[in-house]
Length: 218
Image 1 (cartoon, rainbow, N blue to C red):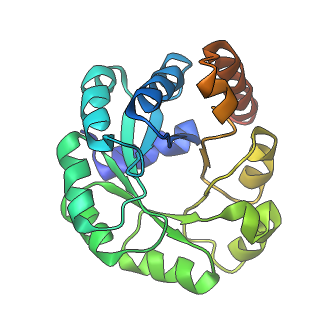
Image 2 (image 1 turned 135 degrees about the vertical axis):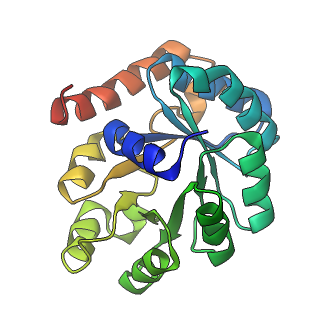
């Protein structure tokens, strides 16, 4: 399991945090595998997904040796944080700022992403100890322009753009100061997952990666 510092470095390198939020464990596993097989290495499985902890455990055992980091998302309690940690998650993600989750992450050297919307909430999440603050839901708050505006007085806080984020929006969020983007439905839309059209999903992932690659060539 990676340290918080190692996970942060990977996020800053990878930019894309690929989110798995599905109605069944079977679909979630297939989507996670599609992400990994198409070159995404930071995968968030939300705790709204059935059997999320089991999936994190099984997938991390399979893919951690090749450098894939797994996060647990939609965490709301310290009990969920502990369950995610036991399953092998190196990163804890919440849609809001929950001090107990942040404290658990700090105690166990896990990267913590706390959700916030307003400047007050963002600063409080940072001061509570979040490693990164997720501006969520970024698009509904005003998209990249909102992000750019709040970054002007709050430049010392690492922020990522919480979904939904379209592939076409990646550049704009990065230009506005985001350190990373949460991506789910724009990579694996419901209709393509239901149709098991993994080739089309792979093409969307390749498109998103090409945007990042053009900005940060290896």
